[in-house]
Length: 272
Ligand SMILES: [Zn+2]
Image (cartoon, rainbow, N blue to C red; front, side, top):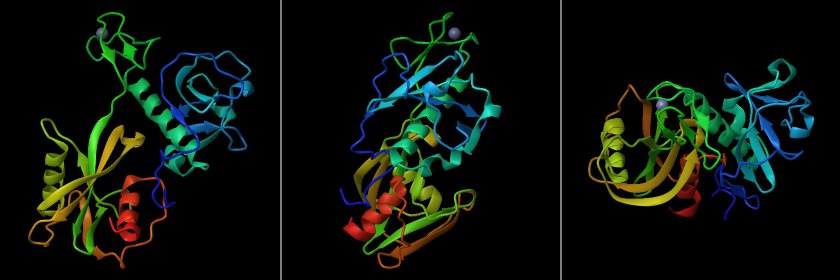
């Protein structure tokens, strides 16, 4: 795989193992606690390992990468640790540690959001057999939330359309959005493009997908061709800019984290 065609989940030769097998922690396993919007790290900014924990703590098994397992806890004394904002997690190196920490972040959010049953407000238990929260009163079973969403690169011969969000993330992006009730992925693509930039498209082709823990979503990446008029009508509530760039004009983007960036690089260097 060319170096510029990788994303946060591409951690080869490491292997992500998400089978849910409740287990005891080993000395070198990762112990992760989030405090508000921060992950707790050792004073030297290293990840906390099980052998460094002196007291008895409750642990929730998340997943493993190779032989390293990841556990969540809420029992650490946060005043004894350094804090790193979760916005920085994706940039941790090596990349498998970034992937590990964002996965733990997603599961931690899911556990917090489902501490109590949404049907009857009883305190939920964690299943011992699968990655699920179970209500002991009404048997409601809740699995981690994964929302389908699309990212789409719109081509017009040698040009593609890049956008900038009206708020927050400051770099160039592609049209993206969550699937709504009753939509296929193709319906979502056409609706999002028309809503955000007022264009029509054709020849929708699948590219790759990406688990994106920050929005609890599974992103599906697509490429399509402009169909007709190239005049952009901007949805200014969502976007502050949408501009056509030729292949040569495209900004260099060497972030090997996101599907958005990989799609842009694939167009620039790989004749997507
Ligand atoms: Zn319940």
